[in-house]
Length: 47
Length: 303
Image (cartoon, each protein chain N blue to C red):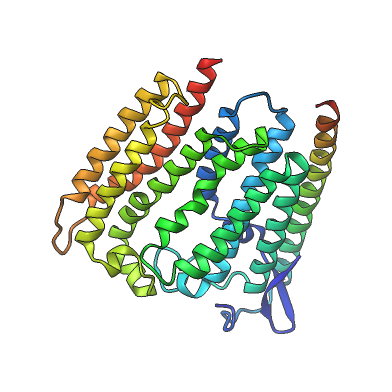
């Protein structure tokens, strides 16, 4: 478990890469959810 | 978002692939499919956006359940070959990150269901998540060999939730589909447990082959396969489906029974490769996909 993580030298590049990939993914997810909630609202209005 | 592995004073953010793996994507595919079939087999028309959103909510709810299950069982997973490489036991993700991810995803899935469908479906989704996490994972699984018999109810909810999301009410057919998955679960999991028995024994999980022995498990696989087959065919004579489903269920269940008989009446020696058990496990997954496909085609055919 993580109580005793494998000791590895801290990798700045890996840190930035993960941060960037998560930020990109989060942007896509939030954009997608905004669109989905808009479409749900429209669908409920015409139902 | 939560962070994970600590390296001195700095921390590495959890990789999104590990968060995705936490949701048990392979288990989720069966959940999504049966939920979709429940929704498509329901009477009336569902707006495609609302139908999609309901299925997405069920998918996220199942993913949340998987994440919370892995969070709770991280120490057990570390003891089993099959699960030791999961993100938590492998140390790629911090337990707190997994817990936050699971709880957040569960809450969001219920909110999405409430917004896209109705409170009845949202309530059922909540019950299924709570049942899987608290009743199955925390209470039954470490205590009794009947864990997957009763816990099977958690996996049986999706078609019922799909139907209720479409109609707002419960009917006999989705209850029968619930019963079908409920009765399918023991032979499916016990076939797996027979060939990964040593893994479960090492982790101290009281699965049926570990507690009651191999022969007893084999007999029970046969017993459950028999009543599952009866439950699978029952909607046809009771008039809830047409002949198309009836014949498909009869043929598919006959093959399930045949494979179960081979497993049920067999005795093994040390070093056995457990081919009949592996075959039954593999077919049981295909069986569920095919029988739910038959429910939908039968419904479309009748329109």
